[in-house]
Image (cartoon, rainbow, N blue to C red; front, top):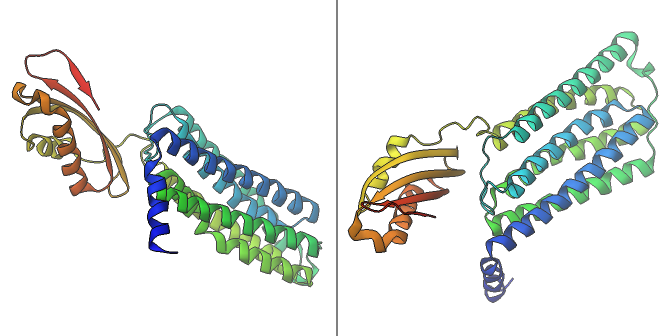
Length: 314
């Protein structure tokens, strides 16, 4: 790609308004969510019809991907969050989704583990395990679904980088880091179709454990701020704000997010009357100083001018 073409592409993304960016991010994420749901339905149907425990175990990974997409979509569509460069905050919906994820993964994993243990204990020889009927058409369908999902999430990650959208990038990475599991499943189904029945039970056992690890990773990445923990000490933010010329005091400091990834800061700043016409400059200086020290950040500053009751929010 030529330099001129790269410059035109960057100019296109930069020229988009915040509302357009949010709309594009939502559409990309919504398409991937539906693709994940379709993939889940295909895996459950194939696992149930063939009695394949490994396919049912792989469905747990797809459920984790779907919950991750739902969390990101919630962050993008909520009216109480910034659009485009998102952070997550506490809410009943997010808490219920996390509890639902934990309950679904826990119930599914426990059920599959009991089935695997029952098969291994009741069957004296691994060669005598129950038959699993895997056809070439099923393997081809699963391969196409895996390729489509990988391509969709890779495109989502590229859009997330261009849009500087944390929600898109985090959700895409959650899937791409586990893409090798889909390849492993396809190879295992080939072996099962050749008569190696024991591969199904052994792979199901391993995939259940990996599904638990994937679910935990999603929780750690996507919802570290569900409890509204303080990301940056208020004293440190107050000290930074008071270093800006014209700021006499600062209070009401709150911060959420993960330092180094994305932090949302809210504060009230009292400004000297002589700097009343320089409010925007003061806000920019505060945000720039916080960003230089803590990385990606969004600051909502409420400016109060000494001697005036009016407020100015940004």
